[in-house]
Length: 225
Image (cartoon, rainbow, N blue to C red; front, side, top):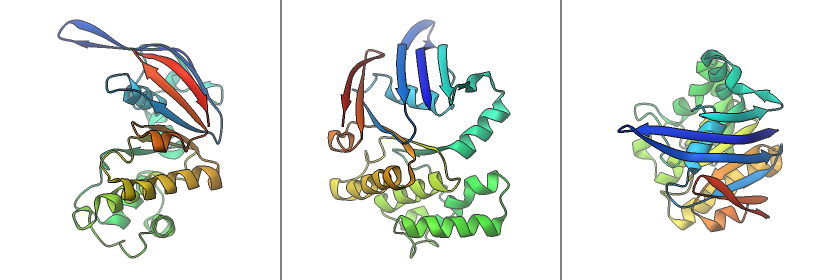
């Protein structure tokens, strides 16, 4: 489903060249769950942003179903992100002025889905993640775990093929984090959604079907779950 070949990413800062990714090769199968481990600065988030077409590589190729998405213009890339990929970040990035329902509906409304249909989708998903009684609450009225579950619901509303999660439990205590883990793992297993998780959490990584590591901008290990 996803194939990365000789992927490189270089940043320029204060006239200095910083090579973050140094020639990655990686394949991810449909329905697989993959954890990407590595210390801070190893390039994990950069890789995830490229996988999600939020950033462009300096060189190399990334294909989805044998199509190089970086040959597309920005409008088509945005449509691809909206329809095919769900993002869950360490910081939930919810809009504070909107309630759980409205935050969850947002990607569907951006896609042109009617408000009525978007609301129906959001209601189903919020119930699925255990927030059916919190739909009118704004982020400031929710716990950290509840906010992250809203973020998961928002990532699911367009029925994506892939969920990309960047430290999804990083700001949560162990008990709350496990609830979010359980939701992500269950989605992968029951809906066959491809799941890629960047994490420092070895317990979460061990629940994935495969674990890979990044060190100094390169893949350094592969472990089957």
